Length: 493
Ligand SMILES: *[C@@H]1O[C@H](CO)[C@@H](O)[C@H](O)[C@H]1NC(C)=O
Ligand SMILES: *[C@@H]1O[C@H](CO)[C@@H](O)[C@H](O)[C@H]1NC(C)=O
Ligand SMILES: *[C@@H]1O[C@H](CO)[C@@H](O)[C@H](O)[C@H]1NC(C)=O
Ligand SMILES: *[C@@H]1O[C@H](CO)[C@@H](O)[C@H](O)[C@H]1NC(C)=O
Ligand SMILES: *[C@@H]1O[C@H](CO)[C@@H](O)[C@H](O)[C@H]1NC(C)=O
Image 1: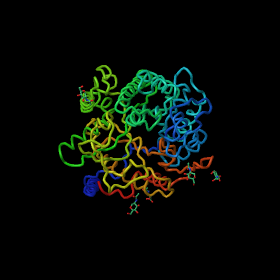
Image 2: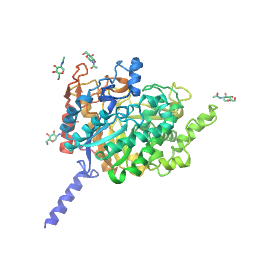
Image 3: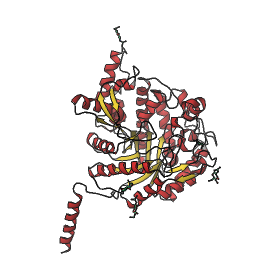
Image 4: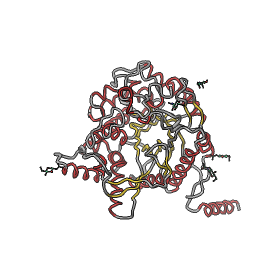
């Protein structure tokens, strides 16, 4: 009898849900919140911290930052870290993703000199998180390279890969007894393009069509060295996992034509695939379509060889498979057509990709010129990753919405609710997504946009020297989602 009732109930549930098997986030699924060191810490020259490229860039070129601001004080999280952890705790998340400032720990960038105040600062944060049952998830490199390493050429000099490994070993040694989730780099594509292609980010080097490719090879080797170091020396005793965070747009073909489909695939491979393929594909190496394209264009421009460096067979082998999970940052989508973006420099990355990118005028805008609200792109992306890369374990490490700082931030709530709806749909589709990390805890120093763009669940008054924090409506929305493990208005699948 009982069995019949149970079968009947299961049958009714099946009918009612149709394709949509789950309406709630599965029990393994975790919610988190993220920040990065330069954007929140401040105290840029205190307690022995060394200078990094963002300190130098904002001080030397104030006109390169939208509001001529710096991260000298930022959210003052160097002092207010305890308060910030209380905000994290109040949200009910199970983990906190933050980054370590390389130059706060190693003031010169080199591992021969460790700054005790830096060690104390991160120990305090990690210990307080654990006391509150919040897991630390730590990014090693979130864009703030020590200036002395930049003086050697930064991520275009292969020797930096070794110094990154040395830094990683110091971090594992100091904190790995308590930190079990490591992210080596945050967003290779943004690092290499913003730093060495267009120079919009520190240190502001514009070497279009050249610098970004050199950077990508050094970055991949640095990542792989840090991964292998963990594998060899720490994994057995510390038992943690190591991944990398890769960001990407979703690209959707504008038409059903073959040539636009080919262009769209090329755009995806040259954005996401660029660093995804070498690490996560079975064969490794840069995507073939990317290698062929850049070689062809380079030769036609009379370069003696491709501007994309070659990965040797042993390098390919060394990089391939160096992941325990994929960290994914995703914000928005573009339509793609075959044909050149105009006007574009030659040579340049955009010229090499050689596609037209468009937005739909109907898409909802945000305060950032580049971010349009396109929730369905998130589901397409997650499914594309599932199919192309053999359904890897995915932690969404960033997703967020910029506005001007409204406390009643309805647009942010709508954005997250729609993107989370598509994430839940993608779990129903079979994608192995196990974490969602909202960007960001507080409003902060948004790089070249200074304090003009706000992604926080908590408002920060940057005109007040004590930097008071105030919860926005989105903070209670996120709390509700985490607490209920479900989404308001989740009906369609
Ligand atoms: C490459 O060199 C050839 C032969 O000297 C010349 O005709 C052609 O214009 C050059 N192409 C470019 C893009 O400079
Ligand atoms: C859910 O739907 C209601 C009614 O349409 C709407 O008022 C509310 O803003 C929606 N909530 C979210 C988070 O989208
Ligand atoms: C400080 O206040 C002024 C006036 O209200 C405002 O325009 C400016 O954006 C504020 N600056 C910051 C960094 O919040
Ligand atoms: C600055 O913030 C502090 C702490 O919240 C508050 O007591 C003070 O009134 C604020 N000052 C101004 C000028 O708003
Ligand atoms: C969570 O559930 C409570 C109680 O059912 C409801 O009032 C609240 O609106 C829900 N919040 C969210 C964000 O789903």
